Image (cartoon, rainbow, N blue to C red; front, side):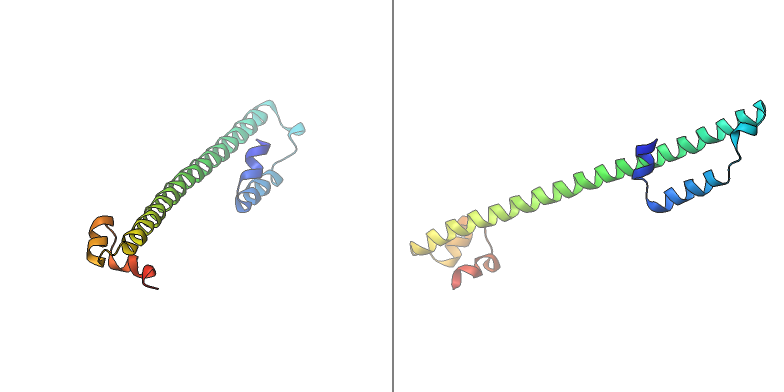
Length: 116
């Protein structure tokens, strides 16, 4: 429970602490009141455990989505870099821009850095 509490957003931690501050001293509760008290504590614990589980699940999904985007971007950049290297070689061999675009699959905007 301590780990769950530490990982909750501050607003949720405050709500939990405010709730706990309002609870009576359990030493003076009857057995019936103590049973109701224990049930309410379990309900709060279940709620925050579920909330934390949802938070972790959302964080994991976000990380996976970010990783997938990063990998895709890295691959695209790598393919562009390799295509430009091939285009440089073809250009040095005297090929025309249209032949280079056809051979590499690159578009004119992607070949512009080679014009310098």
